[in-house]
Image (cartoon, rainbow, N blue to C red; front, side, top):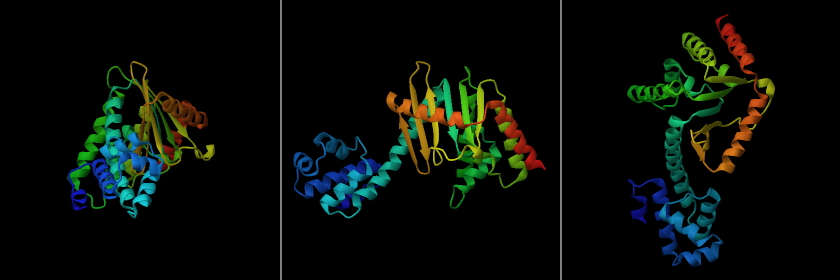
Length: 273
């Protein structure tokens, strides 16, 4: 089994696939026999072993039980999931760069609206032992993405921010003042519609995740939802439609653009008083 565990240069999904194949062969089972025993489709199991597909966690729990492998497959699944997240995020970034329409919902100040100082504070907090070079590299990458809002032709952008984003100030008053001023300024750009989802709207269905919907010039759309340590890119039309309807419900709960701008200015005034 050492050859599987020591495959440090392989992706997490490849290691999981190799481990699945190792356990099956060690048990003396063919893919057909495993399919009969577990009820999973033979071609599906084959794609898992080849690393072409990542299963649901419950499948790995079932196979751990089948092979008597403790939580070995579950642990490999968690590592593989991070690889998939990175791949999906890269794909999302490519699509975002070409999008003609962007709809976003965020619980915090979205990266596309963060000032350099605010982004530096946020990203420094993500590091267990902050390294200046790493943080500055991440800040540069985040600020560099903001050209998307001003590229020609300018995309049509709608951003809904939870009130939470405006109630969690930066450590330095000057940083927070500049951040609020920047949000106010962007809210008045002709290609940007900014809305605030107030606490008064009550609980909602996106309290633990952000959501982005993108449409390309040809009309095709994708949805990307993201939480702590996970992200999911949806390109199937039915899935995108489901997320669009979800976004519409958030928009119905949010303040109007003009009321949202007034709200932001009131928060800025409160901060300065």
